[in-house]
Length: 139
Image (tube, rainbow, N blue to C red; front, side, top):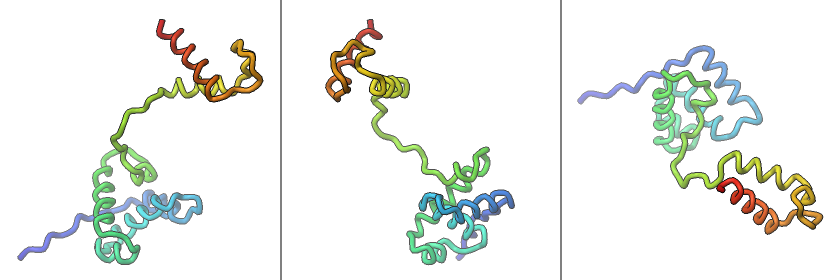
């Protein structure tokens, strides 16, 4: 019976330094720090099972992040980007960034600038004003 050798993960010195800095920073999100620890432990030659036991996580989590690290090796990404979650599928956004910025600009300006006889914006007034703006743009 042959035993499959695990994929070797060799960290560059610069990557190792950046990963250690992420682990040691107090404001690094815990998910990123955990993933960084996984990568360091794998590069030190630890098995997936021992890493999972040591970090009290599932072995499949270790395998997932090891494989993701190896997949992104050829890409020109920073360590931080390589440890991020991948984009998830889901419903498309309902508003473009320009629309969101326009709404914030509208909400931050006084209602008198838009000819409204009120002192403060309400959700209903903002909706009405935004709807009017959309109608003007679609004409």
